[in-house]
Length: 250
Image (cartoon, rainbow, N blue to C red):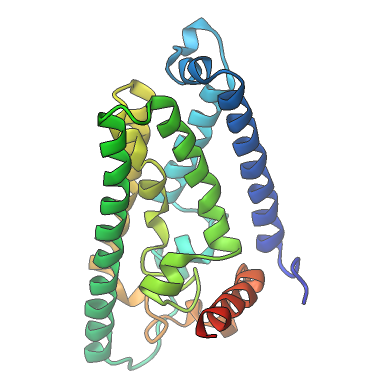
């Protein structure tokens, strides 16, 4: 099995390595001095550039790219673009409607789960059990987990959406909203801008899905079929997912 079979896969592995390093740095800062770790996240850039400012710029830049995806984007994110749409001649409008209804039901179940799960962290925060530093660290963990879901294993895809892969995933661009959910509880400029930009990304995605559902379904878009996929980022995840499902069946 060739894990480096495409340029996109190699590029994603490099980005994954960056996220691992970023998480290790953030975790080290947290374990070394919890309070100073949080101070870094609220210090104005006018008082000196630090690692947190760089991470904020990275986060914001990535989200802007997802609202205005170009050719460098993966097929999973890029399928909202007209350029990625290769129509299937004579596809069934009725089947497309059923696809939309079914995917929406599954998607909102995932959303309710996410809100409930992060509501628990909100309660822990407001009751003083965890603080703002823990919420920042949780966001960094989500930042890393986003690529774990893309490259290794995605519980939302496996147990929730049950889509074939990221390219066909109905909720592919919900990741940034998920990632910055903990930032909602922190009332600083950096946290709020990240949360609301993540919200803008998911709203944009949902508007595109509502207006152009045919771009999201392989029954109406040839470009997102396995035979036409140029990303092949599922190389590792497909095997890992199969192994996990086989284990759960025992």
